[in-house]
Image (cartoon, rainbow, N blue to C red; front, top):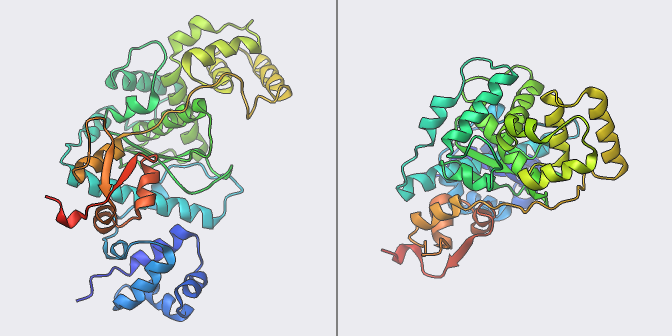
Length: 369
């Protein structure tokens, strides 16, 4: 009986960023045979063929036995810039699909009830909110997450994780070709690209992606730029509430004064300036003037005032519960053969998604009780 899934070959190829010809060369097969395997799902896969492909792609044999999670890549929310290639887009989508599949499997194994969908369902709009409506939804989301209506969000990632949303760093190197995060409207899952991003940028990224999860669960603007603008508006209100912004920002403030806003609310100077403009606290001329000064001081990419980077823990904890290796400190010790055999992903990749919070367990999963 053939238990292998031919469509997983194409997913593996896209994840690695290879052409069919490259996959064939690396697997020691002919391009014609690879094309037949990929193009005809009814093809009988031999274990020998799959072993060659698994070896070449550095993916467990079990990866090619899993069912497809059925993720519609067209519904993935991440901003693609003009410089992005199809190859890179495929790699991002493939890794996120693998992450989503892993999260789904771990959730079913860890026996932790998922209450995320219920609160998302209640707050997600089915109409097209204007800017003020987006701000109101962001304020309501803060309340649902147990945050006060005013003041800084002390730990953005933990605030979101406590409500059941999984947050994980992705391994695909994107440089400046895409935005900093990825979400899927039907999944309580946020992927982000760390790549040495400062803490304030990471916090805004998570808030932005949370905006996508909430605002675009049941609706999706036809204009992608509007969808991104909504998520930015949500993130701005979530991190720097309008009442706070009006209390601390004035038209007369100089660029140096925004250092206080950044240190107090963990939002970048650039985002705070944009927030002031969006709320009408400064006019267009002042907005442009402040950005010119930021550019002159080389603050566009390297701002002063360090905001510490935050780190996700929920996925690592779920893996620890699933495989019985969660200690009193919350550290997860899991077996390599359990991760690779049951989840179909390399241990190292799972560890990357867990922000390097996994410790490999020497004992075999099959001997565990």
